[in-house]
Image (tube, one colour):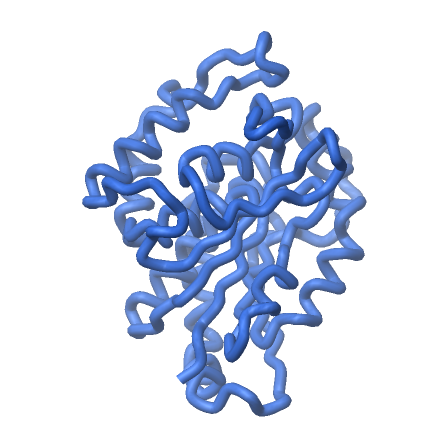
Length: 268
């Protein structure tokens, strides 16, 4: 049996479709061996790799008041400092028996992708503190303050690479499944400052994303393109879309896992 590698990209609230994909995988007994994630995909992937089930992540979203996540961070180079997010993540890990926070000790292998503003390059967390890695990969510039780590200034990995399939494709004997939640280019005007910034980044990384997708054996595309990136009232729709997209290819996916190595490539 090949290893199953899952690549989860960024997409703000649309990234919660990853939870739907994971729910479908759990229901069908598909075990994930390694996860690479960036931005929202990094948060979902990292917590799942630490042993937090998809339904527990959903429960946390439902029950956590939004004000708990909003600590002012103007002095830290962002609207939100992000310390409250660290507290919520720590609580969630402890609730599910994950007392170690070292990435190298997690039940599922995990990589979180961020970007170092000083060097202008990707920085990959493969070991070290999980909470720091999650906080860095979600640090959307201007919204969340960057993370200072080992002399680096780290922000959201989606700034350079919103779907880092190549980080998984280097794994030997691994069926690479990419979940693409980015929307195509739209011609409606952005509604606010965050959408202006987000759409600008999306345009800059679009070509790299398309090139990355060619490296995947399976691509799952939840129908979330109609949902605005920061409309968090629509998170249940995103989860449902992820679940539906995974279910649509489940039979074919099981065959791919059983007969990995054949040249066929699926794109949904």
